[in-house]
Length: 282
Image: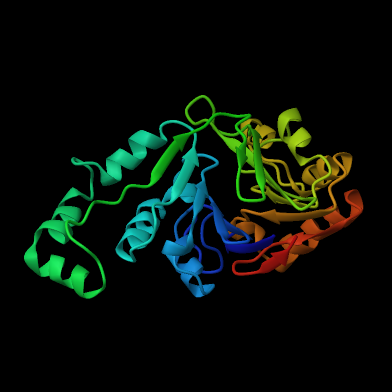
């Protein structure tokens, strides 16, 4: 498995980090976890195209995890790609319809591209055929505990503790050839996610609170700091632990030093903080 970090940031507009998005490649499958703002640009910078994406799994629908969804699907469609298989909690079908349905926000664009003779001829000149259908990603709404069998890989899920009851939130695991990757989504420490992390070869865990940072108690409960993540990963026998979803104020040299110190103190495996466009073999 090959992991490419397409977005390691937060909702904050930030040149160093796009919002959330991670690409996992297994054979011919290119599996995207979340699709926040800037992720499509980084996908292209990494040498891939939107039409290359075969599967997309949403952890939840905060904007920084799904803002580039419409762009990804539209661009893949315009490249003539196969429909992307898209999975996520409810209301995924309504979200998709809101973009690509007959009354969706992109209806005027899609009508112009498929009905005007000039646009039709551009499409034909690029190798397309008429009539041209609208984008139609394959939508599957899922719940915590959902599992999926891919081509030589298997996916599991657990409930992440984050934005309930407004948003259902998920964490995901992928296993392939004896190796296990876990993406925490946005979550507090909870038993379901800890169980999902058990014996992971690579855990990518969100970190929205700096080492020792004091915030409102409601946020503290949902936002473990690096030391708390490290302790959980150690208890779950994780082999490699990397933090993501860093906020601007955490991204100083001092912030990184403190986070890495806590990781080293409480976790015995390889650890660190990811950056956009880094690549890891699992």
